[in-house]
Length: 206
Image (cartoon, rainbow, N blue to C red; front, side):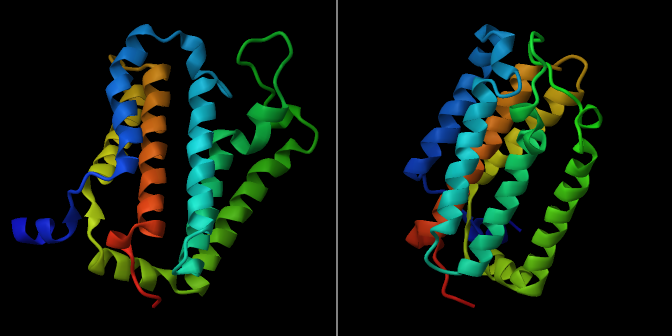
């Protein structure tokens, strides 16, 4: 088992790893000293999350090999982006005079269409992935290319910290939750960059 794991993990420290590493190191100071307002919708932390997603999207589109696969990844990143802005609700429908207040979809004309359209886009993304048999490409990546260990670690830490911040009574904290998401997206951006551009993760067209 140890040999199998080591054979499928890349422990190199790539320059792009500095971004999630710095975010991880800043998480505790952020929880201790940042004002609650930084965790608001469209606040500094969420805005930075969106910036990372935009970069990840751009990296996916500019990949020079397996274009169809990376186009699919770009479509998935759009899903994450739309989730962060609640399909645009937290950008276009703030409640005037109420801090961090936003109208609900049911209070907005034709707002009931938002979730069905979002679901339709997710379905289209899934169909694109299956139609082009990209699960085969994904399997070849898993089988032939070593995973970037440190980025995967930060992905997992981001998910775990996010769940703790959202669901734990003792550690429930909106700033911790947003920092966890920021860590997740920074690591995701790094992974997309490595697989799209770094020769250590390069794979010939299937």
